[in-house]
Image (cartoon, rainbow, N blue to C red; front, side, top):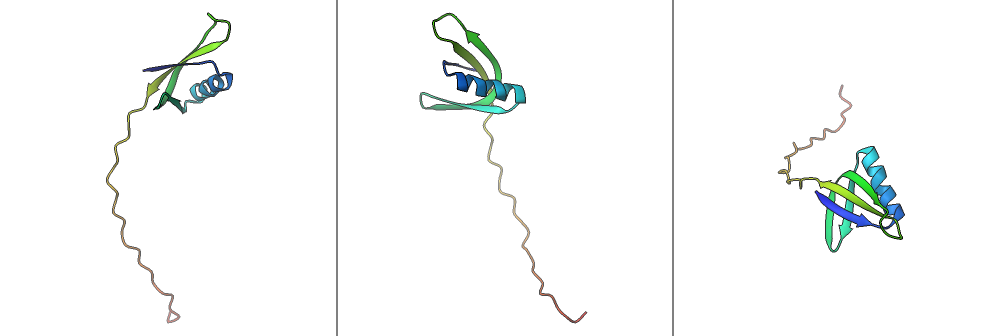
Length: 82
């Protein structure tokens, strides 16, 4: 699990909406990018400004599947001999 703290109200709202709708969220922090499901958002009222602690469960990286070979497309010209 990945824990991230933010003081940005809009960002906290975006994570709440992602959690509510069951969508993945992406956090970019200190050169690292984490994508996953939001597990919890907790407001921390210990300081003068509001802060939120966001917990994300990272998605497993997708393995690249070998490209499926497509069948050749055959084009037949329309004939008037029917």
